[in-house]
Length: 151
Image (tube, rainbow, N blue to C red; front, top):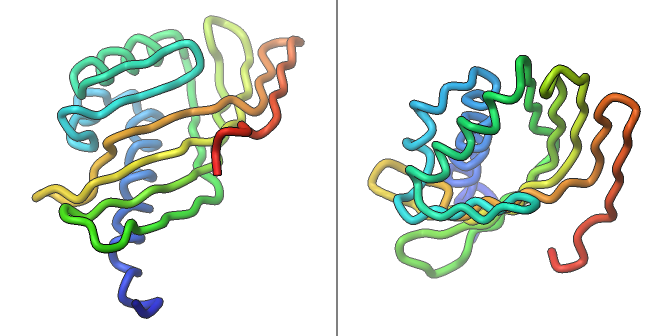
């Protein structure tokens, strides 16, 4: 496969990831269900959430704790899974979040490990796993190494 042959799906996934961050920043969870497959899974530290409706509700509850939040997506990679139908892909995205969480100035840095599937509406998240690498909340700082179970 030439480099140009897989550009369009990769670009579509980049847009999906950017849209997710945009919805978080606007706290527009009423639009989030469009980005997830019905059986999507979200794993974040301490929580495993399965199903599109459950994920949307869970994210809305978390975002209600932030009076202000900015999620910024930094570098990322996308790998298409060859010879699959429907088309599948995986991705890794580094991000930072900053804002005010429950009245405290908070900065978060971490990595999303994603799985995507192409639907009739385009690529959608089927799995998102977030691993915390850094968090500063007020004067408290937490740092974690890159997860050893990720490739």
